[in-house]
Image 1: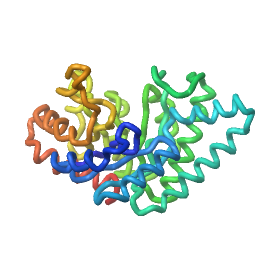
Image 2 (image 1 turned 30 degrees about the vertical axis):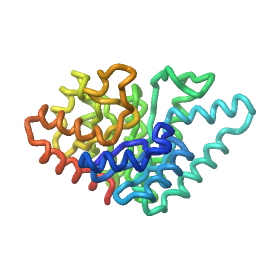
Image 3 (image 1 turned 180 degrees about the horizontal axis):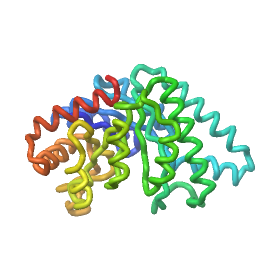
Image 4 (image 1 turned 90 degrees about the horizontal axis):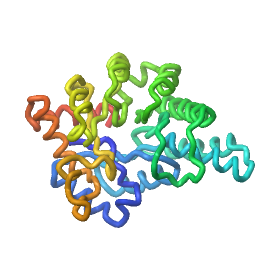
Length: 284
């Protein structure tokens, strides 16, 4: 099994990465990709990936963290265009590393997060415009360096598809994924028409809407991800608070088993197919 989206570069896993990877391997997880959300986590993803065979890194700036540029500009009256340019140069400098397989996760996000480090976080059209500008630049980097793309879209389908469509290239067919794809028919249709993989996470174990959506995804378009330490699947999600674990890449085995039953095929067959899909996605 291949966990295509696992944040081993996040603080939740500090000091226990070796243990977490070992547990994943025991659970049958053969490959892991670590996506990033900013420059620091991009570097950390590479640092972790370097320690393990079949663990890979992706680098990029998540749309939520693009707010940093607006916040810095507001407080220091700095030209945030230069700040963005500098950070994108840092991302570009990492793309030549042999463990880096993709640019990501990148996209557009209109969700109001209950927890954020940004004091004056606000979704307005200026911020969305900036997200779209940075997404364009990161798609162009993926094209230039022949890397795959991990797309993040949350409650921003129109803006997101507008940017992706404006820069779409045949080079990206079979080399892009809609991470934790919203259960939306238009997104699915676009993905199938452009040979974009659909990433499915642990929320399928408790969301009826996600379960119905997953049934519609052709097997050849399906890849699995945990998004750990987030999106804890059942049965762990229903554990008492004092016994509830953080999400782990080893839990991909539970997600695969759940979807296999949902689709009426063996876990082994589903694991083989989705692993092959992920290897194709990242051109490994």
